[in-house]
Image 1 (tube, rainbow, N blue to C red):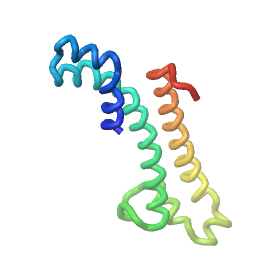
Image 2 (cartoon, one colour):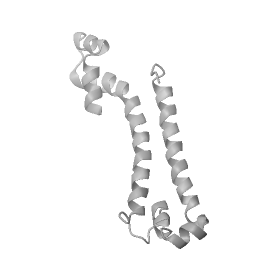
Image 3 (cartoon, rainbow, N blue to C red):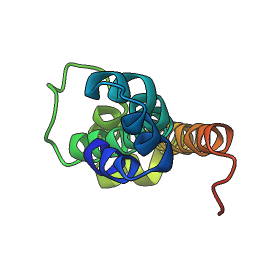
Image 4 (cartoon, rainbow, N blue to C red):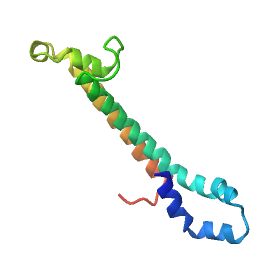
Length: 124
């Protein structure tokens, strides 16, 4: 992602103007290209964090991931994956499932808010 951002910024008018004015390559990178690409990088990081939480929980539910003695929402869901628990004890699996969903939604909303704050010209 960073490479594609830098390749698109390389052809921008302000980068060409910096080259013409005699700025060094490292100065152009650190003073112009990096600040211009920081917004999309931060937004992508927040959205990837939500994705990683969902993947970790899904891997825990199917039995892969950290040890079963380590507390995680996926381990709680994995321990309640029998018919008796699912049908008679909903308090064992509904709260962790809701918390995983709410956490992923909140992080996605934070990423959307950051995108709107950093790049207000972005059209939905």
